[in-house]
Amino acid sequence: MESALVAWAHRNTALAVAGFAVAFRCTHHLLRNLPLPKVVRIDAFRTWKWRNLSVSMVHSLLTGIWAVTSLILEPDMVHKIYDFYTPLSYLLVCVSSGYFVQDACDIIFTGHARGSWEFLLHHFLVLCSFLYTLFSWHYVAGAVVALLVEVNSVTLHMRLMLKLAEAQHTPLYKANRLLNVFTYVFFRLSAQFYLTWYIHYNYHVLDQAAYFMVTMVLMNIMILIYFYRLIRADFFPRKKRHAEQNGSAHGGDSSNTRFLND
Image (tube, rainbow, N blue to C red; front, side):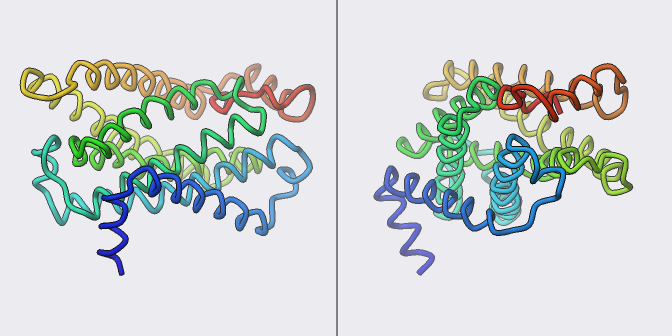
């Protein structure tokens, strides 16, 4: 059955991506049945953000473990990111593309696009790269390496959910804070910089190298900015900034609150 699904996705890429987008939307509806922390439940923006992050957590757990396992089983993908992949790694990129379609639609159609434009830009860059990969059958292994960042996304989502629940002073948050920095450096920064180096080193023999180099540079700038914000917020907090964030979370037009304020 697994091989049949992989073969079908390989022949019907667009339908596979759309199908996985629908699957993640169904996951969103299923997760709505789970109880919410009281402080989250009483605020409309926090409720939406919690549910959005819950689906993201499912995606990160699934694809992060999948990407690590794929590279352990087929280490050649690390060195042959252009022309080598396995059927299951192709399916992984289909699944992840479906999630990014679903998440972008969730942000746009719930009216949070303005406050989440950085996430939409990220999703646009990832989707353009992944869809090119899926339809050209090139860079599939590179996409799998890129999905190592989802290991870090698990701790990032946990961090945000704990802050939404106002649990940032708990031992769990403090432990996650340290683990988050480690996974950010080891899985996110390392994966991104390796891919950038690989494209630069093989620039003259890779198709669409200019596009992927520009995309990687933009992504690198974004993740370095996010890392700076993360370190500043978790290890060098400013009381005034926190007070402003708490005020915007509990009053005013919270729909315009940006993800990265947290």
